[in-house]
Image (cartoon, rainbow, N blue to C red; front, side):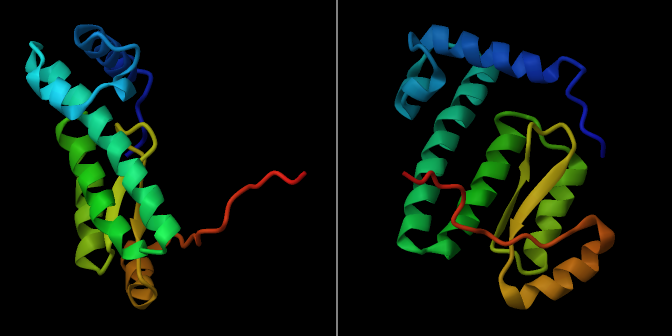
Length: 156
C-alpha cells in the first residue's frame, strides 16, 4: 500500500498531540507521564494520541536498555506493543500492515511493527536466523534482509 501522507492525517496527528500537551500543561508530550494522561480531562481521541506518545517513549528507553544489555529477544515484545499502539491509539496502521506484522510473527519473527509515519508503507521484523529463509521466501521480493550494526560514531 502506498503511503499517503499528503491527505492531512499526519498533520492532524501532530495537531492532536499539541492539543493534548496543552491540556496536560506540558511543553511536549514527552514531558508527560502515563498517569497524567490517564487522569486528564480530555476526549478519548486526544487521550489515545497522548498515551501512544508517552508509552512509545518508554518503549524506546526499554529497547535501548535491552540492546545495551545484549537482550535482543526482549525487543520482540516491545516491537509488538509498539505496533499495537500505533494501530489502536495513534491509528496510523492499515489492515495490510497488520497482516504483514501478524504473518511475520506466525513465521517466527520475535516481533514486528510498522515503520515510518504509517498510513501505508513498510514494516520491520526482528527475525532469528533460523526463520529468515522461510520469511524471505514467504514475502518474496517484497522483503529483504538487513543486519544491525554499531551505527555511526564520531571520532575525535
